[in-house]
Length: 180
Image (tube, rainbow, N blue to C red; front, side, top):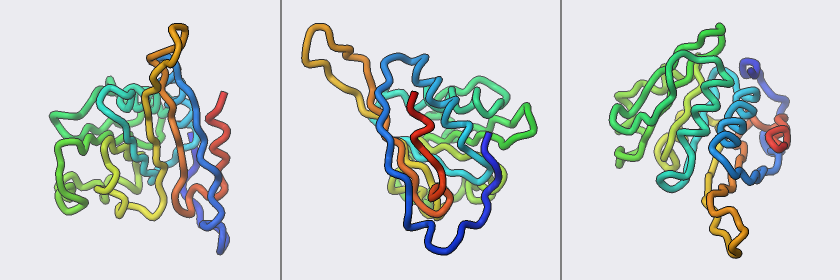
């Protein structure tokens, strides 16, 4: 698990690591990616997950929960909007939000008190793009795209996951550690 946020030297926020693109072929590998991602996360981190329905956002979050050592089964929070999974290991809680049914920006999500949860938790927001970026000057953006095989031997179930850091928190983080 990562360490709490520390201030970065002036100017480092402009030197973000390049985005990484990872091809993921199975649900188990998506959970593995989530566990590797959890090792980079710390209290106060915001992760935005974007991708079409069924792309693997919740499966990735399930791996994050395993990597963070949180309580409870990580399932889609579509109908409850948000679930909190407390840590079993003394680390940060996982706050898992599904913003799919929320049309507005941060104002509509204010009732969820994400700004209160963020400093002590890892907050993961599915469908959060354009809705919660104002919560933090730093975030990880994760985009999951399905690939379509062009030959009979191609794996039609593969996903391409692009992870990019935004803001000073990610300036010194080597995202290439997510690639295996």
